[in-house]
Length: 232
Image (cartoon, rainbow, N blue to C red; front, side, top):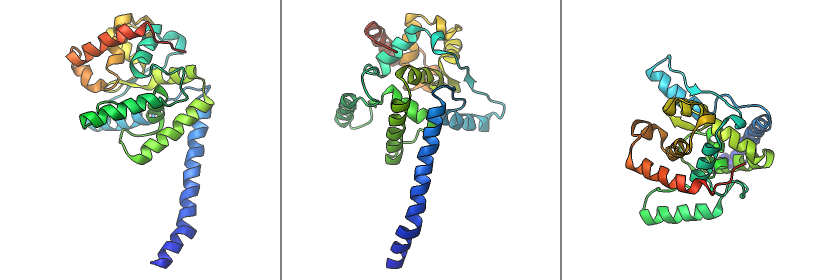
């Protein structure tokens, strides 16, 4: 037993540490590259595409990158109002929001609120899987720090707008606008933007239940908050 412990600390642990550091460097290299280049496929997209192609080998994701200037200010306001009201002020983590979410979850006895910022959501979309583990949360935090350190808020938001899921195989603002309203992302109205923002937490469900009372109620709340939302 003692020999096994010594072997682990002398041989195995150093290798694991080297691999861990190499992985962080690999992630940082991607973040640096994406300051001026657009991501193609995210980890979330890849995983979902693999699942969908098991059912239909010909299936292709709906995704088209558009520049920040070609996305309606209405959608930008709606997402900030819905997902991260303090986006311009925090360093990647809304500590007060996380505290509120924790207290709500404890009170309800189940997960009813997340508290993740736009930067945190982008971090997990780009590199991680939907599963929830302590390791994944730590890695999400590390990637969030990288994003906030290397990129400006405008670039973080631009990537976020172009990669988040908005339905079964639907990713990014342009694909979502075309899918639900038959318009470009630049043409989204106040009401359309509020509805799109309202389905972000569970897009595949609300894609099939567009008139669900929960989503309509949330869209109404977002509409009221939009006028106060500041975005990059």
